Image (cartoon, rainbow, N blue to C red; front, side):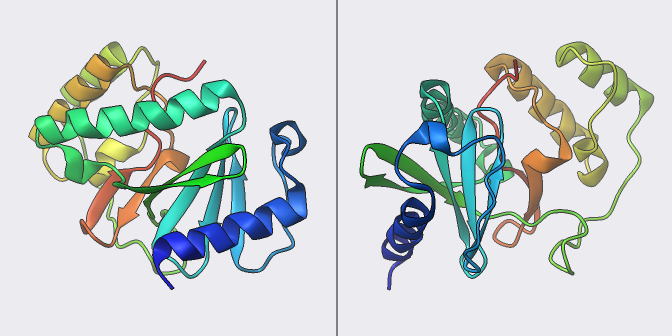
Length: 192
């Protein structure tokens, strides 16, 4: 079975459990299906299969659909700047019923049962100050502490600022087995 076929199977199981009306998905739906976990943000729902190297994102609203499209656009911009290896790679799209699901490379989060070998590092006060200024926040998120080179952190901060990305809490990045370093898994843009 291909990844896309498996994704279609998971989506069918999701629809069987929750129906096909997006407004029924709620903030944090709980699944009884042992094949995947569900996570929900403000605008999108994510299926995380337990035995696959991809995740599936669905917009819970039109704004969520736009965020999926925006991630595809941002990934292409990252490719132009040779930064794509810091982002979860868009893999394929599944049109299922009324909705379009976007599949991305899977990442593993800090503390997730031996899946992430990321180690925390120190960052300079200059990087902290620049980060807070560029991304309009009072404190630095954790991710720069897991990237070895400040030059890379500075390039990423510039890219985030240019693309309007500032929702970078630790649920939006993790460890990539493909890249063997941190990647961003939710880079659709600004939180509201």
